[in-house]
Length: 471
View 1 (tube, one colour):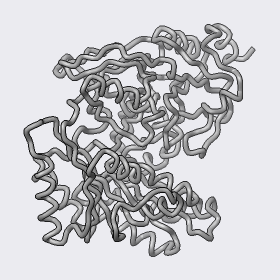
View 2: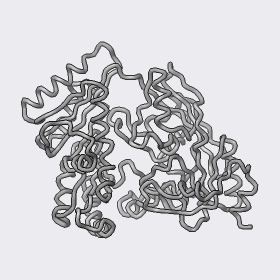
View 3: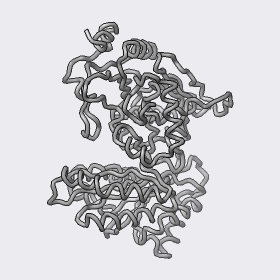
View 4: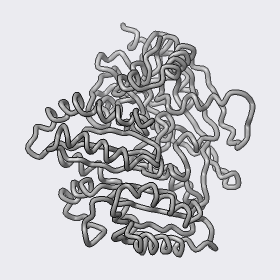
């Protein structure tokens, strides 16, 4: 009996899944770029069972791959191909442990699906301000392990900014329990931050205390055509000033991205009568029943249209209109998939340099692959640009992508680095971006990351081969 089988045989059989028809959904990554293997999937029901699993597996030298909703874009939650690793899924740990409306906080199991947490918060007249395209399936533990971004970062920050406390099972089975949802707790190192964005390489997140916000009483959503991409930063600044910093989302969508979707989804309609090269999806919200947010946005648009900055626009008259605007934005990735997929570049620069980056990167693509189709969109309010490239209609998609990633993608990443940006804004590192981290990451930071990994997981049992190589 090998080490993995020996370990599995000593665990409660009701948490062990061996049926390979079921196991297969845990071994294929979200984008179907990588297929691994595993002897079994373990589905613990409690923190105690997670501790038991970790002690049993690491005690026998068996590596662990923690998994939430398996929505990683960088294969961070996928086991390797040799079958030596065991997947531990947190999906059965989905309990709401506490909600404190007076403290604007909730404490939850790591396996809670993000949209379910939205529902619970809403039932209490609150919101959890973390919103992602995959929120119907992603789990909060995975969101924190990857420091997820999403559409509300401009006001509420990344996932790490919403964490008050964290519970983690360490590689030796020890439980780090720091779940107290305090706003102020200056009692030494803020160790919970080590595990946010670590992608399961330092331990398994089993619970979290999260910040909530008051539910908006007024939300204003506008889909705008802008005349010049260079004015993105200026328009965002004006929007914040006019609304008193009430902007929650400020999303850029290129016309080419929108057309890729509309061309394949006949049931969807364009929000505006005339097409434009550049669009902005602007949303502002307030919990106050006294502030005239609609008037503020109307004044903003009057000025922007008078000056020619905004050439056309539509303001959502009701929730159906608002949902349609957001449906278009959130399904831009689907439009890429329906057109052969894309080479993805999840980059970030200063918000003041987003337009400059888009122009320069577009020039690089035009110079090297003028036949390529650009699909550019992103969270302009936080500087995150999804600069994606779709194969030409007559190209063999796999061949185009491989060639582009080898010849042009390095130029795009170098451009971001030269502008003081990042090669990974919100997707993380996983397995796919280790080479980019080695090339563009700060050597001092990488050294510290390796030391932390060595200190907490000296045998490299926790999600090996992801984020940073040990040593």
